[in-house]
Every structure is written in structure tokens, then in C-alpha cells.
Image (cartoon, rainbow, N blue to C red):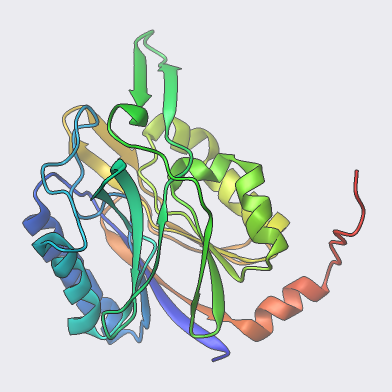
Length: 270
């Protein structure tokens, strides 16, 4: 397939997975009406905790929560890509991106390698400390999947800042990088647009970033501005600050045209 129409859904997920699922289903139905074949979801779309302890609704391949997510793909006949969940494994709780085909087959997963840790001083002098390591065990392995002929490199939120991981994807010539996220407001304002556009430019690939937005909990506010960026670094769609979705059409022909504009020779070792 030379073209792929995608939808990037932006949410204000809460702890309540049932409420989150209802909103997701509404947005998928609308996006399907506009021809979307693949749906990209944010980080922790299923249940977003308060950041101090894991969600009680942990996903596992043998439980109802896994099936609830799988049904979104099957009942809507869409690919479900990129969105992450709190996943219970033998190693601990993982921040895992699950990816489903329209028939409900799991087409690969990715466990967030770089867990978010920050200590930010706001303008009023207060400090905000966040450490995902309190909740999650980090992953260790990059993952590339294929959807309708498009190679997709999987990453999650804070991974955006780690060039070694992204270099792995660039060298494997992925067509798309996806960054489901729950960026904080201060870091989002400072870096979100700039870094996503830079990743598209240096990787000569599409970048799709589905984000959380608004007040998820009394102590958690997320930046929003889900983006679709083309390989030239141009923003194809920006979801702004509220819940909703954006539609973008990706083209293999356009991808090759962008790549032909500039030869990024990797044969030189420094």
C-alpha cells in the first residue's frame, strides 16, 4: 500500500478505564467515518494513575483489560498502534505499547526503555519532581513493526530525548516514528514541537505523537498538542489543548520524494 490514512487521538485519560474506553470508542467511530485505517493512542490511554502508584487496572495478556483493548481494533476494523498501558509482567509493571491488527492479532509490543525523571522549578519557585521508576520497570529492546507496508519504530514519551535509541530506528530506515506521550506542561511548552520536528527531519520519516492533555488528576496536567509531522519537518496536524483527534494521510511516494531531496550518508564513521 502506498498510502495510509491515520488518526491520532488526544485524551484526558483518568484512572477510570471504562470512561476512557467510552471516549476512545467515540473518537475511533468518528475517525473511521473520515477513512482512518490506523489509530494512534497516547501513553497510558487505558488508565492513568496519579504518578505515585500503579493503576489498579493492570493489563496482562490473559485478562479482561487486554481483551477490552483488543476489541477496539476488532470491532472497529482498524489497526491500533503505539498507545501504551501499565502492563503486569513477571519482571514488574511495564509501560508497554500494544499494537493490534484489525483482526485482533498482537503485531508486536514495546516496553518503554527510558523512564521519565525530572526536577523542574516553576516560575513561582515551587518544584515538581517526577520519577517513573517508582512505578515502572524499564524495558531494554527497540521494536519495529510493519503496518500496510510502512515500517514503524516504536518509542514512548521520554524516549524522544535519547538519540541512541532513535539512531537505531534511523539506521533501519523506518517510515514512521511514533511517540505516545503524557508530557508535562512545562516540558511540553519548552521542547515538544521542536524535538518532534527535529526527529522527523533527522530521521527523514513521519513522526506521529498522540498525547495526553488537560487535568488528568489534581496533581497531573499534561500538555496535549498531539502532532503529525512529515519528513521535511512540517506539521501536518496539531490537536491543540483539548480532547479530540487529527487525521493525516501518509504516502510512500511523498516519503521517497522527501528523502531524495537530501542524501544523509551514514557511511562515514566519526
